[in-house]
Amino acid sequence: MPEPLLISIEERLEEASARGIADAVTRAMRDGVLAPGTKLPPIRTVAAQLQLSPTTVSAGWALLTRSGVINTDGRRGTTIAAIRAPGPARYRRTLQRHTAFDLDLSTGVPDPDLLPELSTAFSQLRAAPFPGSYLDDPVLPELVELLHADWPYKAEGITVVDGAMDALDLAATALLRFGDRVVVEHPCFPPLLDLLEATGVEVVGVPVDGEGMSVAGLTQALAVSPAAVFLQPRAQNPTGVSLTTGRASDLAAVLRTVGTCVIEDDSAGAVAATADISLGRWIPQQTLHVRSFSKSHGPDLRLAAVSGPAPLLTKLVGRRQLGQGWTSRLLQRVLATLLGDKRAIRRVAHARDEYARRRAAFVHELAARGVEVGGSDGINVWVPVRDESAALLRLASQGIGVAPGSPFGVLPGPVNHIRVTVGLLTDGHADVAESIAAAAGTGAWTGAR
Image 1: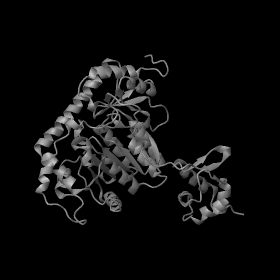
Image 2: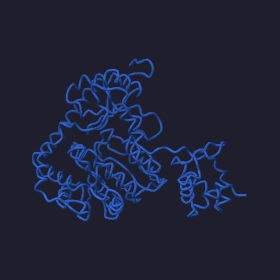
Image 3: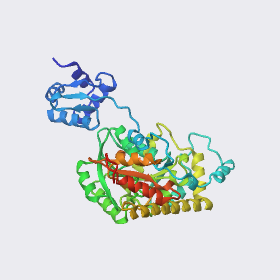
Image 4: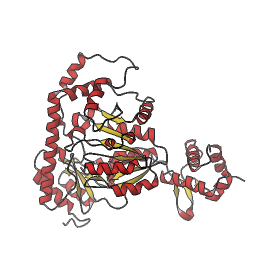
């Protein structure tokens, strides 16, 4: 006699495939039929009830396992996993504070003193026409014109969203499905990993070296047929690595052969010291390029621009119409004013140069103390340490906060790095480098270098 839980899965099975089985199980979970801890029958029993091959059922179980929906434990069998509340788990670990710091270099945020003044832009809103309809164009034409003039490649279309993470969320929701595989950089920005985990996709890590994502690593990762590749073209967070033109060209050549979509997160934007670059220069029909204005013009503007081919942008915009609909045109007008204002342009250029100065000064002082770091751009430095926990504790005892490296890890094995936001370090680079270098050599238990 068929088991009741198999009947419940069979009733929800809409497609005789691995994907169909995975969807049926998740529907049964949402309906409360399969509770966490429920033990599932053997694969052959399931296959017989559903009139499918054991291979198909096994593939469906594999999808569910990769997404954390079920747990498989050898002879103990397969059970429904405990429900994990979606949320920024890695991001919370990155910013977790057990004490207040005299010098907090853990945040990854820009220096507010280097942001452009907004008073002039806001004052001009009084004279500007205010949109008064849900049906007005979602993006200001004058802002689109400014963006096209300063884009790293000739993009087919550009839209505006509420920050880079909004763009990545829209891309994940519109383009990815439960159980898909996606390629990311190792190390990778924790909020992106949180987002992808919540989407239910399998993350495949590819190492980053001094020129960007590894070509050999990407080639190997493409063997698993990923649905998308996510990368940061400039000032990669946390390493500070920017793609070289040669590396970007090589990555594009590899991706062109398979047609996989690439989603670029240029989070540094206008305060990056390296030249703007995008794989869209070589494969525009496969590229979504995101440029954030948070670090350059202000996090609270919550603005980013996204370019891409019409089919991809249509999917993003269509998904957005089910929720937010559009980004505030008032804030778009503020950004358009700032992008055309000479004083704001000079202010952003000064911030770019000042961040570069601060980073170079800190890296120089670290090197003088025997600690070499990679990357050359952005507000963060990725510092290798002997033991992550010991380094964090030692620095905390001195009133210095830095971010742990482990939440950035994708590939197996210890990360043994810390991220230091040196963009907030206005002076005292030698003293802070001395503390960081000492912490980098701290052992796990003895505290000795």
